[in-house]
Image (cartoon, rainbow, N blue to C red; front, top):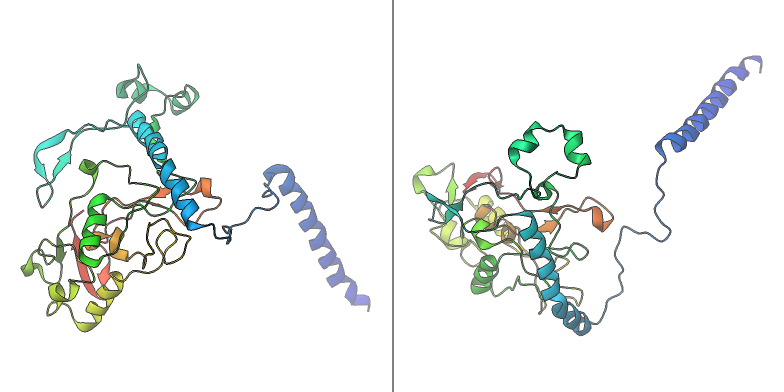
Length: 294
């Protein structure tokens, strides 16, 4: 009993120290408590699809105008291709710095200013700020027209949304379809043969080139799975029920197509950043290394 006071004193000391540190953190860090009723999950109440369709389709023109006005205010979107420089299939590459500067400001002026001065005078170019989703409160996958048309022609799946279109002009998007070069079979050149690889043609294109395990991996990349905007329920943003979205719908032919979405690792919604799926240059078809045109 005489020796038992030491552990008790140590435990009491830890409690006191923890309490003081907690009080100090609250005073210094001032953690923000989420508002009452805030949830990481969306409501599971399903609205009538016909009502949602009519309301969001009617609002589409104004939503897109707001986004396109924002793009025009931030960037020079004119068609100025680099003479003689194209992508693999001949699509011109656009030239020049496209971020617009505040009135009366030049790049040389900004280069001579301290960072604090740029910030305090509000001269930081808006084009370097995060670009919002075409409809940020709504979010979700949005695909370019060429991807929508290509997938629908081959598979019958419709990746068009009734409430939104992609906002980036086609001249700034990658060429379509992207070529595919296998690092393990460089002698074959572009194994896509100028086609968009889908579940309808992958076997014809890759049988005899990839092994069975690799073919199965490629099949999974081309298999659609239900997704928030494209599914079989009434809670969707496609006009008709959809089987979903495949990996290669965003990473066309293992490359990219400029499709957009919001990152899934942040809440609440307004803090989620817009993202564009990158090329899958370092990915594999379950073992076969793929190099795609960036």
